[in-house]
Length: 190
Ligand SMILES: [Zn+2]
Image (cartoon, rainbow, N blue to C red; front, side, top):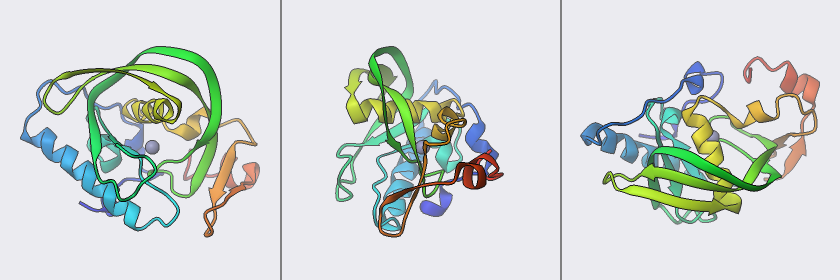
């Protein structure tokens, strides 16, 4: 499994709603390993980015599984936490705007509003119940990844905001995009 297995826009499967997992069998465990391998391989090809998380639909497997890297800042960290059937049970605090990118929307970043705190309910790969309260960047990651399980992408949240879209340059900087030319009429995105 490599980065080539990560589906990107305009692949319509990114818009599928993922299925709830009722039994964690070998097939599901294999999907989890494939997700990790694809994310790590993607990292190697991206000089300025770290693959912090992935949803199963991003490798074209429509299951409610997300993986989140334990250390979001370090490519050297190749360990992930697994969340199966993740749901947000409570939103808390203010909605804050920050940059967000996606392995399935290459080179485009957006300033997206997300709640600063979310309560998460899921099971892990051993079918053990997991309940956590995520804050800050981790809360943002959960909201982004759980959106994927519903067929939603970060760009959908900012579709009509002309000032929210940026492009990652070769130097690793973010440069404002021309909304009319690059975004609104971009048939790859919509
Ligand atoms: Zn994403």
